[in-house]
Length: 272
Image 1 (spheres, rainbow, N blue to C red):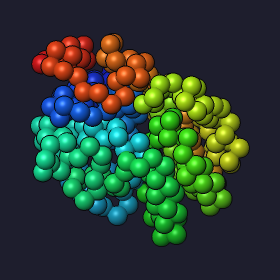
Image 2 (image 1 turned 90 degrees about the vertical axis):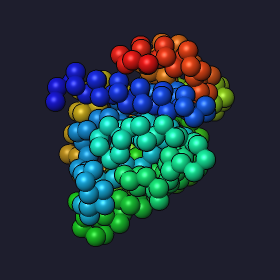
Image 3 (image 1 turned 120 degrees about the horizontal axis):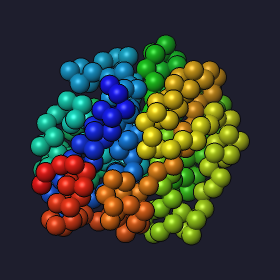
Image 4 (image 1 turned 180 degrees about the vertical axis):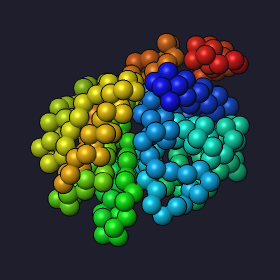
């Protein structure tokens, strides 16, 4: 596919996110939208996966360490063919398998139940180490939020990954500069993120997280790197694709009403 096709897929993912969160009446649109291009690139190009065989032994695995952005993972899985997109419109409703945070026991394609920040990357280190020990070629990808880097657990995992030379592990930081309480720099600065990962022994790349060419190039470099895990610091915009949500911390965990959802879907090229 050409870049335009990936951009159109990402727009579909964003539309699914808006529809599902509106239907739920709660959820986290800002960080789901900021991560949509990265997650689309993973599910539609980078990862070795098969919707008809979700548990195949040599598959690559994606762990959403920022589990509150579950809608973007559900949407990517739906568009990739794991289940109909309409199914995720039951998001957060009583009895739904599409819970507010991903549940590995309920939804095909979810590799780890996440939500408690810092645990996703920690489990990813364990998965990558297990694959090394087993001689399994599957790669592990994990997506963190920038506010999540305030968790000490993240840096314990980073230290372990470098110590065990986990070159089959790629961590992507969705660096949109905002978290639930406002700007990272005001709450607890995490900068300089690239230098911190490098100091822990990681191979580090900084990219525009909305530019598919840069995203694909970063993944190529991660696969080529030997002896070190890779951290991709993706500069993004919270609420990307919806003008009134972009760079607004207030949209971290708020559902759009019907008029806002309609405007968002139409702005993304869909029909309400």
